[in-house]
Image (cartoon, each protein chain N blue to C red):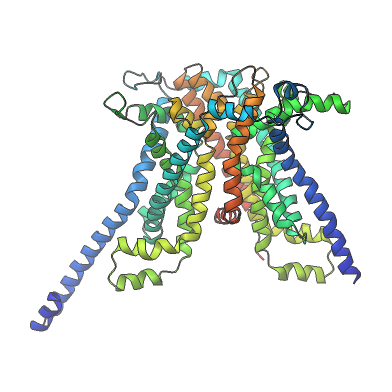
Length: 287
Length: 317
């Protein structure tokens, strides 16, 4: 009995501590949200208080200034297509690497693995110079890797390979061979064996790979800032950046912009939370 | 069909069969090698163009006087760029600053992440909600987080100081050299502690309840359980988490850019930012590339050393 009481008491203290700590997370977000509604005068003199009037004018102004819907569209297209390709290409490669037990395939796998240590800055400068030379024609219909969405998508896919192949590889190794063998006996070739038998079985790790890459590329700033130059191509982080010039930030606009930037992320998190957390766990255990 | 008809029609000699089998095997091996190649070809295509070509050419460029555009006409200058990099006081300074930041992050992210994991692995009823809240900042990118906290540190803190009469603690941290460092650490920890927590939770769940119960029956106190049972069995999680925090902190750019932008007076400039500035602000592309190569080498040495060091302490139960 007293043991029970002790443990309830302990868990109540734990809950209290836990909720106080959660204020540390919610607090800053709360501050940003309430201040985004304040008038220019109030935001300047009073950051702590409740808004005197709720004004939405800065939201519409900020949405216009950052071309919110257009940026959202760009982000969705770039992240969506990149992640679909990463999933398809990395799963194929990882399956081939994991199922073929030769020295060559092991060397290739370790090459993918080793390059995970390379910081982006170590390839950044030659990367931009190299892809600058990939251009054909001129004008609006020119093929060019720099300053185009497909150019950025191409680079995202390349950078996504290491981690994604690594995650798929570990998972494939844990899947038993029997089903693939019976598919082979039934006369499936490798291609249809992979897409009809193997790929559906990789679903749990596909969710992990997709989620980790979505988070990664949705928030990516540096590479898009170097690749996309036309304002019409800006993604969400790029267009948010332009509220923060070197001097004199207009906080009303900036905060409204920040809130609008976070909203899609929060919606995604609320919807896919269970998969996100278990995906991160699965990704880490393999590491 | 044809084949089997043949074998029925004309019985084969033993050597004949062996030869045909050999041929068949060879053909199959060649075909499977081809399929293997076709399966990895797309991945290699993207990867080679985006990572390998720039990485290797980057190493070559770092030994030349490359001007950032066409490589044709560049001269090899040996270690000249590396010499310039080392004599650049600001670059050396940025390395020291990155080390200091990475060390603070290593300690705090893991300490807080592990404590949070212990907290939400206990019997609290709302632990799933709490877990989700703690992880949430990880969903928001470093750039946006940096901007959010810039408002907190440069605006809210000033008012807090006035209201609480504690101007000594709450003032504009961004423009103060010492506190600008801690503001970067706070934002980094705020972002990453939740991620570390998730990995520690996975580690805690993998420890069998038998081990925990056995130690409870033996009458071990909570502190002793933590020290002698949990911590040793959690070393793999510590290895992963320390690796992730170290490499992420050493590579940090977004938070640095959005929160302090290297200021005040360049005192909070990290290596990634220094490389970027050397290339795109001062247009010293070859020197920047030499710095980038050094950056890569340092990250590789430090993280491999850490993984080696911690994984040696792993035990199994």
